[in-house]
Length: 92
Image 1 (cartoon, rainbow, N blue to C red):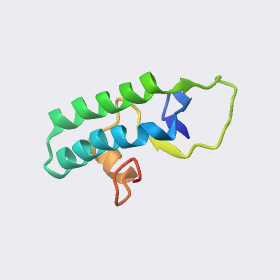
Image 2 (tube, rainbow, N blue to C red):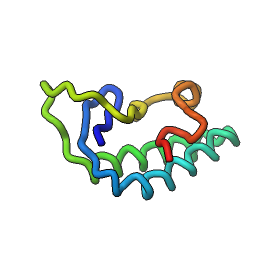
Image 3 (cartoon, rainbow, N blue to C red):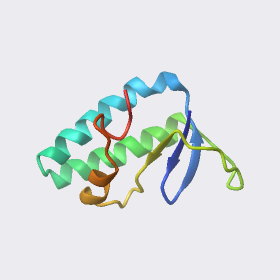
Image 4 (cartoon, one colour):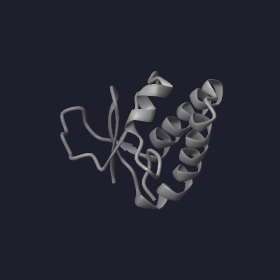
């Protein structure tokens, strides 16, 4: 799966990692629902760090279609809320 982190680039991520990333996504969704800005910031940072750690960066000049688009690390709670689907940022 190709994942884009807005403002950073793309990484290739094995589909097997989706389950563990969904745990962070669920936590992020709960924090957003409760308006927990501190928790939201902490969990968004953790989610993006895991994607970077588990994924392999694609070259900057590579333009692969992204199957998943994640917000930038400095995205606001409102900006992320606008990106959400019914399942959160990560489907499944």
